[in-house]
Image (cartoon, rainbow, N blue to C red):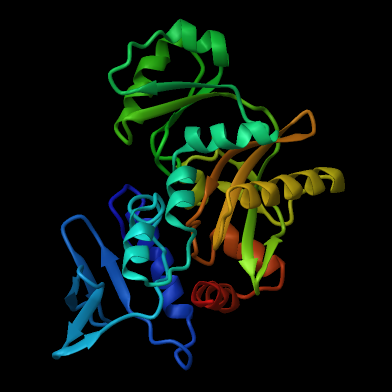
Length: 316
């Protein structure tokens, strides 16, 4: 838990929920904090013990402890973008999230959408900018229209996102996004019902969880809406059977096309009755209030079952 990005606090919450939920009779769990300046095991008294990065082990009172499995609860870098997945693959330690390539691809919004488009997955009209590129606000608006969303390409939890209504506001929105990443994706605004769809491997099968409808009190589903209660998350979503069927089918198709494992939560907006993909999350929030656990509960899967299944899937 932890990580290098603005999402580290949310990750610590997710990690602590997993730690507190796992069955002590079955598992001996250790909280490992991963930060740029330190990798440490934190015990229940908040004492820190360094992690040996050579083999991802810890030593307590001269006892060396190695791990059978890693439960990955890092949102953002380095747990959701492929770095930790590659590291654990090299060490041959099973971990609960998808593989390195899938993590890196889905974390890069524009690359992920580019891979999925040829399969007929619908997405918003988009415009890409890299740090240092000349910026022509009129050319951007000609392609995506107004209002539009300016997003950091590789960031989560709605960090670095601005909804732009006027051409004069484009430059400042771009500057906000560049604080989070050196790549930007600018997307046309889709006006419709927003839903979140969880897809997981459960007992060896790929299953689509009940759909959540997102109703933000704010202008869009931003950080405050996600984490400070300024939104309603309604599970199951108040959408027609036809819409639910369509988006469930697309979400499973995305999971299968990308050869995903572990958890995934993808976001869609309906336009003219069709689901348009916004993004795919591979380490979604795991607190009791988070969307994926809400969906699992609606499917009759408890938090402990959800987490234990993730570990068993990784070990298998």
